[in-house]
Image (cartoon, rainbow, N blue to C red):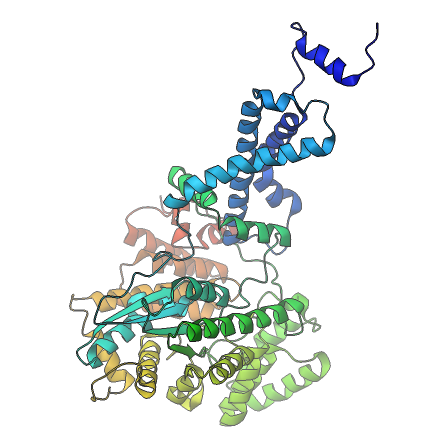
Length: 600
Protein backbone atom coordinates (compact mmCIF):
# COMPACT_ATOMS: atom_id res chain seq x y z
CA UNK A 1 0.00 0.00 0.00
CA UNK A 2 1.45 3.35 -1.08
CA UNK A 3 2.01 5.91 1.57
CA UNK A 4 0.75 9.25 0.28
CA UNK A 5 1.75 11.48 3.18
CA UNK A 6 5.33 12.72 2.47
CA UNK A 7 6.04 13.15 6.17
CA UNK A 8 5.26 9.45 6.71
CA UNK A 9 7.60 8.55 3.83
CA UNK A 10 10.36 10.48 5.54
CA UNK A 11 9.59 8.76 8.80
CA UNK A 12 9.77 5.34 7.14
CA UNK A 13 13.10 6.17 5.54
CA UNK A 14 14.50 7.30 8.85
CA UNK A 15 13.67 4.07 10.57
CA UNK A 16 15.01 1.84 7.81
CA UNK A 17 18.18 0.39 9.33
CA UNK A 18 19.61 -0.56 5.94
CA UNK A 19 19.46 2.90 4.45
CA UNK A 20 21.14 5.83 6.24
CA UNK A 21 19.04 8.99 6.46
CA UNK A 22 19.94 11.74 3.97
CA UNK A 23 21.91 14.64 5.44
CA UNK A 24 19.79 17.68 6.24
CA UNK A 25 19.81 20.47 3.66
CA UNK A 26 21.75 22.92 5.92
CA UNK A 27 24.51 20.32 6.28
CA UNK A 28 24.70 19.79 2.54
CA UNK A 29 24.82 23.54 2.00
CA UNK A 30 27.64 23.91 4.53
CA UNK A 31 29.62 21.18 2.84
CA UNK A 32 29.23 22.72 -0.60
CA UNK A 33 30.07 26.21 0.69
CA UNK A 34 32.99 24.92 2.75
CA UNK A 35 34.61 23.07 -0.14
CA UNK A 36 33.94 26.04 -2.41
CA UNK A 37 35.57 28.52 -0.03
CA UNK A 38 38.58 26.26 0.47
CA UNK A 39 39.04 25.91 -3.27
CA UNK A 40 38.66 29.65 -3.76
CA UNK A 41 41.19 30.34 -1.02
CA UNK A 42 43.73 28.00 -2.58
CA UNK A 43 43.45 29.35 -6.14
CA UNK A 44 42.47 32.95 -5.44
CA UNK A 45 45.98 34.37 -5.55
CA UNK A 46 46.97 32.71 -8.82
CA UNK A 47 43.56 33.49 -10.30
CA UNK A 48 43.87 37.20 -9.61
CA UNK A 49 47.48 37.42 -10.73
CA UNK A 50 47.28 35.38 -13.92
CA UNK A 51 43.68 35.25 -15.13
CA UNK A 52 42.37 38.70 -14.30
CA UNK A 53 45.70 40.37 -15.25
CA UNK A 54 44.78 43.72 -13.70
CA UNK A 55 46.18 47.01 -14.94
CA UNK A 56 48.06 48.74 -13.41
CA UNK A 57 50.21 45.88 -12.04
CA UNK A 58 49.62 44.56 -8.54
CA UNK A 59 51.71 46.32 -5.92
CA UNK A 60 53.25 44.62 -2.86
CA UNK A 61 50.63 46.20 -0.57
CA UNK A 62 47.81 44.94 -2.79
CA UNK A 63 49.41 41.51 -2.82
CA UNK A 64 49.30 41.51 0.97
CA UNK A 65 45.59 42.28 0.84
CA UNK A 66 45.12 39.39 -1.60
CA UNK A 67 46.88 37.04 0.82
CA UNK A 68 44.58 38.26 3.59
CA UNK A 69 41.57 37.55 1.38
CA UNK A 70 42.91 34.02 0.86
CA UNK A 71 43.09 33.66 4.63
CA UNK A 72 39.47 34.78 4.96
CA UNK A 73 38.26 32.21 2.42
CA UNK A 74 40.24 29.34 3.95
CA UNK A 75 39.12 30.22 7.49
CA UNK A 76 35.44 30.43 6.51
CA UNK A 77 35.74 27.18 4.55
CA UNK A 78 37.24 25.30 7.50
CA UNK A 79 34.60 26.63 9.88
CA UNK A 80 31.85 25.64 7.44
CA UNK A 81 33.18 22.10 7.04
CA UNK A 82 33.79 21.72 10.76
CA UNK A 83 30.28 22.90 11.55
CA UNK A 84 28.84 20.50 8.98
CA UNK A 85 30.58 17.54 10.66
CA UNK A 86 29.14 18.48 14.06
CA UNK A 87 25.75 19.37 12.66
CA UNK A 88 25.41 16.06 10.80
CA UNK A 89 25.42 14.27 14.14
CA UNK A 90 22.76 16.54 15.56
CA UNK A 91 19.37 14.90 16.16
CA UNK A 92 17.78 18.35 16.17
CA UNK A 93 18.83 19.00 12.57
CA UNK A 94 17.22 15.82 11.31
CA UNK A 95 13.87 17.44 11.93
CA UNK A 96 14.61 19.82 9.06
CA UNK A 97 14.63 17.07 6.42
CA UNK A 98 11.74 17.90 4.16
CA UNK A 99 11.18 21.37 5.65
CA UNK A 100 10.62 24.39 3.37
CA UNK A 101 13.81 25.86 1.80
CA UNK A 102 13.49 29.11 3.75
CA UNK A 103 13.71 27.30 7.07
CA UNK A 104 16.72 25.32 5.89
CA UNK A 105 18.43 28.51 4.75
CA UNK A 106 17.88 30.16 8.15
CA UNK A 107 19.42 27.16 9.90
CA UNK A 108 22.36 27.19 7.48
CA UNK A 109 23.09 30.86 8.17
CA UNK A 110 22.83 30.28 11.93
CA UNK A 111 25.23 27.36 11.77
CA UNK A 112 27.75 29.53 9.91
CA UNK A 113 27.41 32.62 12.09
CA UNK A 114 27.28 31.09 15.56
CA UNK A 115 30.65 29.25 15.46
CA UNK A 116 32.38 32.27 13.92
CA UNK A 117 30.86 34.55 16.56
CA UNK A 118 32.01 32.30 19.40
CA UNK A 119 35.53 32.14 17.96
CA UNK A 120 35.55 35.93 17.54
CA UNK A 121 34.56 36.47 21.18
CA UNK A 122 37.24 34.04 22.35
CA UNK A 123 39.95 35.74 20.25
CA UNK A 124 39.24 39.35 21.25
CA UNK A 125 41.12 39.41 24.59
CA UNK A 126 44.30 38.14 22.93
CA UNK A 127 44.26 40.08 19.64
CA UNK A 128 43.86 43.85 20.09
CA UNK A 129 43.25 45.99 17.00
CA UNK A 130 46.20 46.50 14.68
CA UNK A 131 45.38 50.13 13.89
CA UNK A 132 46.96 51.64 17.01
CA UNK A 133 50.38 50.27 17.89
CA UNK A 134 50.40 51.77 21.39
CA UNK A 135 47.14 50.08 22.36
CA UNK A 136 43.46 50.87 22.28
CA UNK A 137 43.52 53.43 25.04
CA UNK A 138 46.15 55.70 26.49
CA UNK A 139 46.65 55.11 30.20
CA UNK A 140 45.82 58.09 32.41
CA UNK A 141 48.73 60.48 32.58
CA UNK A 142 50.74 60.51 35.82
CA UNK A 143 50.16 63.33 38.28
CA UNK A 144 52.17 66.44 37.47
CA UNK A 145 52.75 65.35 33.85
CA UNK A 146 51.85 67.43 30.81
CA UNK A 147 51.08 65.07 27.94
CA UNK A 148 51.03 66.08 24.28
CA UNK A 149 49.47 63.57 21.88
CA UNK A 150 50.51 63.98 18.23
CA UNK A 151 48.49 62.11 15.60
CA UNK A 152 48.95 61.87 11.84
CA UNK A 153 50.72 60.02 9.04
CA UNK A 154 54.34 59.39 8.17
CA UNK A 155 55.41 63.00 8.81
CA UNK A 156 54.28 62.57 12.42
CA UNK A 157 55.87 59.13 12.58
CA UNK A 158 59.17 60.69 11.52
CA UNK A 159 59.89 59.26 8.05
CA UNK A 160 62.63 58.81 6.94
CA UNK A 161 64.27 58.81 10.40
CA UNK A 162 62.03 59.00 13.50
CA UNK A 163 65.09 59.87 15.61
CA UNK A 164 65.27 63.23 13.78
CA UNK A 165 61.51 63.70 13.32
CA UNK A 166 59.66 66.76 14.54
CA UNK A 167 57.94 64.81 17.34
CA UNK A 168 61.31 63.76 18.78
CA UNK A 169 62.56 67.33 18.47
CA UNK A 170 59.33 68.66 20.00
CA UNK A 171 59.82 66.38 23.00
CA UNK A 172 63.37 67.70 23.50
CA UNK A 173 62.25 71.32 22.99
CA UNK A 174 59.42 71.09 25.52
CA UNK A 175 61.71 69.57 28.12
CA UNK A 176 63.98 72.55 27.60
CA UNK A 177 61.28 75.19 28.17
CA UNK A 178 58.97 73.43 30.63
CA UNK A 179 58.70 75.25 33.95
CA UNK A 180 59.08 72.47 36.57
CA UNK A 181 56.66 70.23 34.67
CA UNK A 182 57.19 66.64 33.63
CA UNK A 183 56.73 66.32 29.84
CA UNK A 184 55.45 63.35 27.86
CA UNK A 185 54.99 63.46 24.08
CA UNK A 186 53.11 60.51 22.56
CA UNK A 187 53.63 59.76 18.86
CA UNK A 188 50.57 58.25 17.19
CA UNK A 189 51.99 58.66 13.67
CA UNK A 190 51.43 55.85 11.20
CA UNK A 191 52.83 55.86 7.66
CA UNK A 192 50.16 56.28 4.95
CA UNK A 193 47.47 57.06 7.56
CA UNK A 194 44.63 59.30 6.46
CA UNK A 195 42.29 61.59 8.38
CA UNK A 196 40.01 58.59 8.97
CA UNK A 197 42.75 57.01 11.08
CA UNK A 198 43.24 60.29 12.98
CA UNK A 199 39.53 60.49 13.70
CA UNK A 200 39.45 56.87 14.90
CA UNK A 201 42.39 57.37 17.26
CA UNK A 202 40.95 60.61 18.64
CA UNK A 203 37.55 59.08 19.29
CA UNK A 204 39.05 56.07 21.04
CA UNK A 205 41.95 57.54 22.99
CA UNK A 206 41.67 61.25 23.70
CA UNK A 207 40.12 62.29 27.02
CA UNK A 208 41.03 64.94 29.62
CA UNK A 209 42.51 62.17 31.77
CA UNK A 210 44.92 61.11 29.03
CA UNK A 211 45.66 64.25 27.01
CA UNK A 212 46.58 67.84 27.82
CA UNK A 213 47.09 68.91 24.21
CA UNK A 214 46.08 67.18 20.99
CA UNK A 215 48.22 67.99 17.94
CA UNK A 216 46.98 66.86 14.50
CA UNK A 217 48.91 66.95 11.24
CA UNK A 218 47.03 65.16 8.48
CA UNK A 219 46.76 66.40 4.91
CA UNK A 220 49.17 64.48 2.69
CA UNK A 221 47.56 61.04 2.39
CA UNK A 222 43.92 61.68 1.52
CA UNK A 223 44.40 60.67 -2.11
CA UNK A 224 46.97 57.98 -1.45
CA UNK A 225 44.71 54.93 -1.58
CA UNK A 226 42.14 55.80 -4.25
CA UNK A 227 44.27 54.76 -7.23
CA UNK A 228 46.23 51.76 -8.45
CA UNK A 229 44.13 49.16 -6.64
CA UNK A 230 42.81 46.55 -9.08
CA UNK A 231 40.56 44.90 -6.50
CA UNK A 232 36.83 45.33 -6.87
CA UNK A 233 35.27 47.87 -4.52
CA UNK A 234 33.37 45.14 -2.66
CA UNK A 235 36.62 43.32 -1.92
CA UNK A 236 38.31 46.47 -0.65
CA UNK A 237 35.35 47.12 1.68
CA UNK A 238 35.22 43.51 2.91
CA UNK A 239 38.97 43.41 3.60
CA UNK A 240 38.71 46.65 5.57
CA UNK A 241 35.86 45.20 7.64
CA UNK A 242 37.76 41.97 8.28
CA UNK A 243 40.65 43.92 9.80
CA UNK A 244 38.30 44.78 12.64
CA UNK A 245 37.92 41.09 13.44
CA UNK A 246 40.06 39.70 16.26
CA UNK A 247 39.78 36.22 14.74
CA UNK A 248 41.16 37.51 11.46
CA UNK A 249 44.00 39.33 13.23
CA UNK A 250 44.86 36.17 15.13
CA UNK A 251 45.03 34.17 11.90
CA UNK A 252 47.26 36.83 10.31
CA UNK A 253 49.67 36.65 13.26
CA UNK A 254 49.73 32.83 13.21
CA UNK A 255 50.26 32.78 9.45
CA UNK A 256 53.10 35.31 9.61
CA UNK A 257 54.77 33.38 12.41
CA UNK A 258 54.59 30.08 10.52
CA UNK A 259 55.60 31.60 7.19
CA UNK A 260 56.89 35.19 7.26
CA UNK A 261 55.84 37.28 4.25
CA UNK A 262 58.25 36.68 1.38
CA UNK A 263 59.78 39.59 -0.53
CA UNK A 264 58.32 40.32 -3.94
CA UNK A 265 60.02 41.82 -6.93
CA UNK A 266 59.01 45.44 -7.50
CA UNK A 267 58.52 46.22 -11.17
CA UNK A 268 58.34 49.54 -12.95
CA UNK A 269 54.75 49.72 -14.20
CA UNK A 270 54.24 50.63 -17.81
CA UNK A 271 51.59 53.19 -17.04
CA UNK A 272 50.04 54.90 -14.05
CA UNK A 273 46.52 56.05 -13.38
CA UNK A 274 46.02 59.81 -13.21
CA UNK A 275 43.56 61.59 -10.96
CA UNK A 276 42.18 65.09 -11.29
CA UNK A 277 40.02 67.34 -9.15
CA UNK A 278 36.88 66.65 -11.20
CA UNK A 279 37.06 62.92 -10.50
CA UNK A 280 34.29 61.67 -8.22
CA UNK A 281 36.82 59.78 -6.10
CA UNK A 282 38.80 62.98 -5.61
CA UNK A 283 35.70 64.88 -4.51
CA UNK A 284 34.62 62.05 -2.21
CA UNK A 285 38.07 61.98 -0.56
CA UNK A 286 37.96 65.75 -0.11
CA UNK A 287 34.52 65.60 1.55
CA UNK A 288 35.72 62.79 3.79
CA UNK A 289 38.73 64.85 4.85
CA UNK A 290 36.50 67.79 5.78
CA UNK A 291 34.08 65.55 7.71
CA UNK A 292 36.86 63.76 9.59
CA UNK A 293 38.64 66.97 10.56
CA UNK A 294 35.41 68.50 11.81
CA UNK A 295 34.65 65.34 13.77
CA UNK A 296 38.07 65.60 15.44
CA UNK A 297 37.36 69.23 16.38
CA UNK A 298 33.93 68.31 17.77
CA UNK A 299 35.35 65.47 19.89
CA UNK A 300 38.13 67.67 21.23
CA UNK A 301 35.66 70.43 22.12
CA UNK A 302 33.12 68.09 23.74
CA UNK A 303 35.82 66.42 25.83
CA UNK A 304 37.50 69.74 26.70
CA UNK A 305 40.86 68.78 25.22
CA UNK A 306 42.81 71.65 23.59
CA UNK A 307 43.40 71.02 19.90
CA UNK A 308 46.16 72.26 17.59
CA UNK A 309 45.84 71.80 13.81
CA UNK A 310 48.82 71.98 11.46
CA UNK A 311 48.74 72.61 7.72
CA UNK A 312 50.83 70.35 5.50
CA UNK A 313 54.07 71.77 4.05
CA UNK A 314 55.24 70.38 0.70
CA UNK A 315 58.37 70.37 -1.42
CA UNK A 316 57.38 72.78 -4.17
CA UNK A 317 60.59 73.72 -5.95
CA UNK A 318 62.41 70.39 -6.23
CA UNK A 319 59.61 67.83 -6.42
CA UNK A 320 57.78 67.85 -9.77
CA UNK A 321 54.32 66.40 -10.31
CA UNK A 322 54.19 62.75 -11.31
CA UNK A 323 54.76 62.55 -15.06
CA UNK A 324 56.75 59.45 -15.94
CA UNK A 325 54.37 56.67 -16.93
CA UNK A 326 51.24 58.76 -17.50
CA UNK A 327 51.94 59.85 -21.08
CA UNK A 328 49.16 57.55 -22.26
CA UNK A 329 46.68 59.83 -20.43
CA UNK A 330 47.94 63.01 -22.12
CA UNK A 331 46.43 64.28 -25.37
CA UNK A 332 49.97 65.21 -26.42
CA UNK A 333 51.33 62.20 -28.35
CA UNK A 334 54.92 63.36 -27.71
CA UNK A 335 54.43 64.13 -24.02
CA UNK A 336 57.42 62.18 -22.66
CA UNK A 337 59.80 63.47 -25.31
CA UNK A 338 58.67 67.07 -24.82
CA UNK A 339 59.02 66.90 -21.03
CA UNK A 340 62.51 65.38 -21.23
CA UNK A 341 63.73 67.98 -23.74
CA UNK A 342 62.21 70.97 -21.95
CA UNK A 343 63.53 69.85 -18.57
CA UNK A 344 67.06 69.76 -19.95
CA UNK A 345 66.72 73.31 -21.39
CA UNK A 346 64.72 75.14 -18.73
CA UNK A 347 67.65 76.52 -16.71
CA UNK A 348 69.71 77.63 -19.69
CA UNK A 349 66.93 78.84 -22.00
CA UNK A 350 64.01 79.80 -19.72
CA UNK A 351 62.34 82.23 -22.13
CA UNK A 352 62.30 79.74 -25.01
CA UNK A 353 61.05 76.93 -22.75
CA UNK A 354 58.26 79.14 -21.38
CA UNK A 355 57.13 80.06 -24.88
CA UNK A 356 57.04 76.42 -26.00
CA UNK A 357 55.13 75.34 -22.91
CA UNK A 358 52.55 78.10 -23.34
CA UNK A 359 51.95 76.75 -26.83
CA UNK A 360 51.61 73.20 -25.51
CA UNK A 361 49.10 74.41 -22.90
CA UNK A 362 47.15 76.14 -25.66
CA UNK A 363 47.16 73.00 -27.82
CA UNK A 364 46.58 70.33 -25.19
CA UNK A 365 45.36 72.02 -22.00
CA UNK A 366 46.75 72.44 -18.48
CA UNK A 367 49.16 69.90 -17.05
CA UNK A 368 51.02 69.69 -13.75
CA UNK A 369 54.41 69.19 -15.35
CA UNK A 370 53.84 72.07 -17.78
CA UNK A 371 53.12 74.35 -14.78
CA UNK A 372 56.21 73.06 -12.95
CA UNK A 373 58.47 73.84 -15.88
CA UNK A 374 56.87 77.28 -16.26
CA UNK A 375 57.66 77.84 -12.54
CA UNK A 376 61.29 76.84 -13.05
CA UNK A 377 61.54 79.10 -16.09
CA UNK A 378 60.11 82.04 -14.11
CA UNK A 379 62.48 81.34 -11.22
CA UNK A 380 65.45 81.24 -13.61
CA UNK A 381 64.38 84.64 -14.97
CA UNK A 382 64.08 86.05 -11.43
CA UNK A 383 60.28 86.40 -11.55
CA UNK A 384 59.74 84.86 -8.11
CA UNK A 385 56.10 85.89 -7.69
CA UNK A 386 55.12 84.08 -10.89
CA UNK A 387 57.34 81.14 -9.93
CA UNK A 388 55.60 80.68 -6.59
CA UNK A 389 52.16 80.85 -8.20
CA UNK A 390 53.15 78.31 -10.85
CA UNK A 391 54.67 75.94 -8.29
CA UNK A 392 51.41 75.95 -6.31
CA UNK A 393 49.50 75.36 -9.53
CA UNK A 394 51.80 72.45 -10.42
CA UNK A 395 51.25 70.83 -7.02
CA UNK A 396 47.48 71.18 -7.29
CA UNK A 397 47.49 69.71 -10.82
CA UNK A 398 49.63 66.72 -9.81
CA UNK A 399 47.89 63.66 -11.36
CA UNK A 400 48.96 61.65 -8.30
CA UNK A 401 48.44 64.12 -5.40
CA UNK A 402 50.52 62.51 -2.68
CA UNK A 403 50.92 65.75 -0.72
CA UNK A 404 48.73 68.42 0.83
CA UNK A 405 46.95 70.53 -1.78
CA UNK A 406 45.69 74.09 -1.54
CA UNK A 407 42.18 72.74 -0.93
CA UNK A 408 43.17 70.46 1.95
CA UNK A 409 45.22 73.18 3.66
CA UNK A 410 42.36 75.66 3.25
CA UNK A 411 40.02 73.15 4.91
CA UNK A 412 42.44 72.95 7.86
CA UNK A 413 42.53 76.75 8.18
CA UNK A 414 38.72 76.96 7.91
CA UNK A 415 38.12 74.31 10.58
CA UNK A 416 40.63 76.01 12.89
CA UNK A 417 38.76 79.31 12.54
CA UNK A 418 35.28 77.85 12.90
CA UNK A 419 36.13 75.83 16.02
CA UNK A 420 38.53 78.41 17.48
CA UNK A 421 41.45 76.01 17.84
CA UNK A 422 45.14 76.81 17.62
CA UNK A 423 46.52 76.80 14.08
CA UNK A 424 50.16 76.26 13.16
CA UNK A 425 50.33 77.20 9.48
CA UNK A 426 53.35 75.08 8.67
CA UNK A 427 52.91 75.61 4.93
CA UNK A 428 53.49 79.35 5.27
CA UNK A 429 56.10 78.98 8.01
CA UNK A 430 58.21 76.76 5.77
CA UNK A 431 57.90 79.30 2.96
CA UNK A 432 59.19 81.99 5.32
CA UNK A 433 62.31 79.91 6.03
CA UNK A 434 62.91 78.79 2.43
CA UNK A 435 65.14 80.55 -0.07
CA UNK A 436 62.98 82.78 -2.32
CA UNK A 437 59.99 81.46 -0.28
CA UNK A 438 60.07 78.31 -2.43
CA UNK A 439 60.35 75.17 -0.30
CA UNK A 440 62.84 72.61 -1.60
CA UNK A 441 65.16 69.82 -0.52
CA UNK A 442 66.77 71.94 2.19
CA UNK A 443 63.62 71.68 4.31
CA UNK A 444 61.77 68.67 2.87
CA UNK A 445 63.67 65.54 1.87
CA UNK A 446 61.15 64.27 -0.70
CA UNK A 447 57.60 65.41 -1.38
CA UNK A 448 56.37 65.87 2.21
CA UNK A 449 58.79 64.53 4.85
CA UNK A 450 60.85 67.24 6.58
CA UNK A 451 64.61 67.15 6.79
CA UNK A 452 66.13 67.44 10.29
CA UNK A 453 66.18 71.21 9.80
CA UNK A 454 62.58 71.19 8.59
CA UNK A 455 61.60 69.17 11.64
CA UNK A 456 63.35 71.71 13.87
CA UNK A 457 61.36 74.50 12.23
CA UNK A 458 58.11 72.61 12.76
CA UNK A 459 58.92 71.77 16.40
CA UNK A 460 59.79 75.42 17.08
CA UNK A 461 56.53 76.53 15.46
CA UNK A 462 54.52 74.18 17.68
CA UNK A 463 56.27 75.44 20.81
CA UNK A 464 55.56 79.01 19.71
CA UNK A 465 51.91 78.13 19.11
CA UNK A 466 51.64 76.56 22.55
CA UNK A 467 53.24 79.62 24.14
CA UNK A 468 50.94 81.95 22.18
CA UNK A 469 47.81 80.03 23.19
CA UNK A 470 48.87 79.50 26.81
CA UNK A 471 48.64 75.72 26.61
CA UNK A 472 51.49 75.12 29.04
CA UNK A 473 53.46 77.06 31.63
CA UNK A 474 56.85 77.70 30.06
CA UNK A 475 60.00 79.46 31.07
CA UNK A 476 60.37 82.99 29.77
CA UNK A 477 63.56 82.09 27.92
CA UNK A 478 62.99 82.22 24.17
CA UNK A 479 64.26 79.48 21.88
CA UNK A 480 66.98 80.35 19.41
CA UNK A 481 66.78 79.93 15.66
CA UNK A 482 65.78 76.53 14.21
CA UNK A 483 69.42 76.00 13.21
CA UNK A 484 70.53 76.56 16.81
CA UNK A 485 67.74 74.34 18.12
CA UNK A 486 68.77 71.56 15.72
CA UNK A 487 72.43 71.83 16.80
CA UNK A 488 71.40 71.49 20.45
CA UNK A 489 69.20 68.52 19.60
CA UNK A 490 71.97 66.72 17.71
CA UNK A 491 74.34 67.24 20.63
CA UNK A 492 72.08 64.88 22.62
CA UNK A 493 73.39 61.97 20.54
CA UNK A 494 76.54 61.39 22.56
CA UNK A 495 77.46 58.06 20.95
CA UNK A 496 80.35 58.71 18.51
CA UNK A 497 79.29 58.41 14.87
CA UNK A 498 75.61 57.94 15.73
CA UNK A 499 74.45 61.10 13.94
CA UNK A 500 76.36 60.18 10.76
CA UNK A 501 74.95 56.65 10.91
CA UNK A 502 71.38 57.96 11.17
CA UNK A 503 71.95 60.51 8.41
CA UNK A 504 73.30 57.77 6.12
CA UNK A 505 70.26 55.61 6.86
CA UNK A 506 67.98 58.57 6.14
CA UNK A 507 69.73 59.25 2.83
CA UNK A 508 69.35 55.60 1.85
CA UNK A 509 65.62 55.61 2.63
CA UNK A 510 65.16 58.89 0.80
CA UNK A 511 66.84 57.45 -2.29
CA UNK A 512 64.61 54.37 -2.26
CA UNK A 513 61.57 56.61 -1.80
CA UNK A 514 62.54 58.71 -4.84
CA UNK A 515 62.91 55.55 -6.95
CA UNK A 516 59.55 54.03 -6.13
CA UNK A 517 56.28 54.34 -8.05
CA UNK A 518 54.73 56.67 -8.95
CA UNK A 519 57.74 59.03 -8.80
CA UNK A 520 60.75 57.38 -10.50
CA UNK A 521 62.90 60.45 -9.75
CA UNK A 522 66.16 58.69 -10.50
CA UNK A 523 68.41 61.77 -10.45
CA UNK A 524 67.35 62.63 -6.89
CA UNK A 525 67.65 58.96 -5.88
CA UNK A 526 71.24 58.87 -7.18
CA UNK A 527 72.11 62.02 -5.21
CA UNK A 528 70.80 60.45 -2.00
CA UNK A 529 72.60 57.12 -2.54
CA UNK A 530 75.89 58.94 -3.13
CA UNK A 531 75.29 60.91 0.07
CA UNK A 532 74.67 57.66 1.98
CA UNK A 533 77.94 56.26 0.60
CA UNK A 534 79.81 59.45 1.54
CA UNK A 535 78.57 59.17 5.13
CA UNK A 536 79.01 55.39 5.32
CA UNK A 537 81.22 53.97 2.53
CA UNK A 538 80.72 50.38 3.68
CA UNK A 539 76.92 50.47 3.43
CA UNK A 540 76.28 47.75 0.85
CA UNK A 541 72.57 48.62 0.45
CA UNK A 542 73.49 52.05 -0.93
CA UNK A 543 75.90 50.52 -3.47
CA UNK A 544 73.33 47.88 -4.49
CA UNK A 545 70.58 50.45 -4.96
CA UNK A 546 72.99 52.62 -6.93
CA UNK A 547 73.78 49.63 -9.16
CA UNK A 548 70.12 48.81 -9.79
CA UNK A 549 69.51 52.47 -10.55
CA UNK A 550 72.28 52.40 -13.16
CA UNK A 551 70.72 49.28 -14.68
CA UNK A 552 67.35 50.99 -14.91
CA UNK A 553 69.01 53.95 -16.62
CA UNK A 554 70.81 51.69 -19.10
CA UNK A 555 74.36 52.12 -17.74
CA UNK A 556 75.36 48.46 -17.56
CA UNK A 557 79.10 49.04 -17.10
CA UNK A 558 78.57 51.48 -14.25
CA UNK A 559 76.04 49.12 -12.68
CA UNK A 560 78.49 46.20 -12.71
CA UNK A 561 81.10 48.31 -10.90
CA UNK A 562 78.58 49.45 -8.30
CA UNK A 563 77.15 45.95 -7.77
CA UNK A 564 80.71 44.66 -7.31
CA UNK A 565 81.18 47.29 -4.59
CA UNK A 566 77.95 46.10 -2.97
CA UNK A 567 79.08 42.46 -2.97
CA UNK A 568 82.46 43.47 -1.50
CA UNK A 569 80.83 45.56 1.23
CA UNK A 570 78.30 42.87 2.07
CA UNK A 571 80.84 40.07 2.03
CA UNK A 572 78.53 37.66 0.18
CA UNK A 573 76.52 37.56 -3.07
CA UNK A 574 73.30 39.53 -3.52
CA UNK A 575 70.28 37.24 -3.60
CA UNK A 576 66.50 37.44 -3.84
CA UNK A 577 66.12 38.03 -0.09
CA UNK A 578 67.93 41.34 -0.52
CA UNK A 579 64.84 42.67 -2.30
CA UNK A 580 63.79 43.91 1.12
CA UNK A 581 66.63 46.43 1.10
CA UNK A 582 66.99 46.79 -2.67
CA UNK A 583 63.46 46.86 -4.03
CA UNK A 584 64.31 46.83 -7.75
CA UNK A 585 67.21 44.36 -7.55
CA UNK A 586 65.45 41.35 -9.10
CA UNK A 587 63.65 43.42 -11.72
CA UNK A 588 66.73 45.37 -12.82
CA UNK A 589 69.11 42.40 -12.92
CA UNK A 590 66.55 40.30 -14.78
CA UNK A 591 66.01 42.99 -17.37
CA UNK A 592 69.78 43.30 -17.84
CA UNK A 593 70.26 39.55 -18.28
CA UNK A 594 71.92 39.07 -14.89
CA UNK A 595 70.87 36.36 -12.49
CA UNK A 596 70.52 36.11 -8.73
CA UNK A 597 72.41 35.37 -6.58
CA UNK A 598 74.75 37.96 -8.06
CA UNK A 599 78.47 38.03 -7.29
CA UNK A 600 78.99 34.35 -6.58
